[in-house]
Length: 117
Image 1 (tube, rainbow, N blue to C red):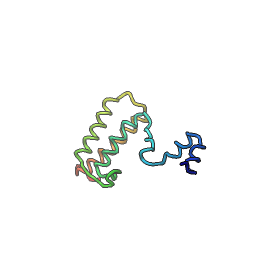
Image 2: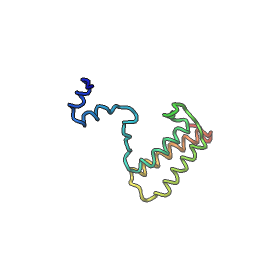
Image 3: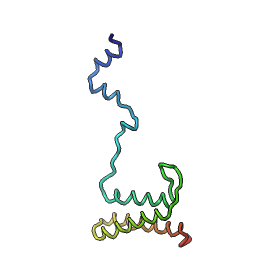
Image 4: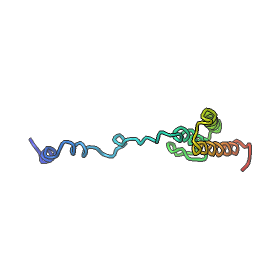
């Protein structure tokens, strides 16, 4: 038995039918890839350090979760990145790394009660 809906589906080109079936569900949304540049290396460590220093809310748990030991590890990884890339960065990349590291280190010293800001 053919219904009106079946007739509508048959009269439409196949591509349109497939397009209609797609919805904006999380499974059908394509992930956006970040640009392939130095900031793609820097930002994950930087943001994780901010989360662990309690300077930003974790977007997944939506909580402030301080862990200065883990934050120090992320800062140390960025220091290692700085050491290993020395002399090979563009001025803006070097500035991003230096400024970000300075900010994280000052925040870490404040959180670990080394200094008072």
